[in-house]
Length: 117
Image (cartoon, rainbow, N blue to C red; front, side):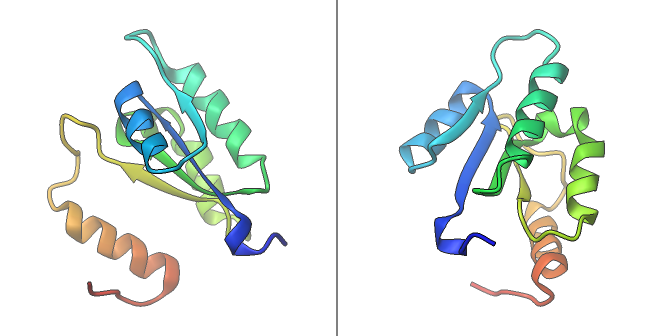
């Protein structure tokens, strides 16, 4: 197993999301361009990143999760701790009513307890 301090963060999203996270230091990314049907591009990108043992966190733009729900379920139900897939809201908003509560539940499910900051 690769030590956690050596795992990378990757992002799948539009140019705006990827550019912002690249400024924050993310070096693995897939930009989904244009208004075409992005289904195959997103599936290919996520499949590639899931197969890389050095990727610990995959941030995927919320708009694209509908294309890869089956892959995300496989990863979440798998016995491996990595990669963790995190949905990132799009620039036009989120599909969740209370995004704070969504992430609290997600963290509680993943690590087993609440975190208050």
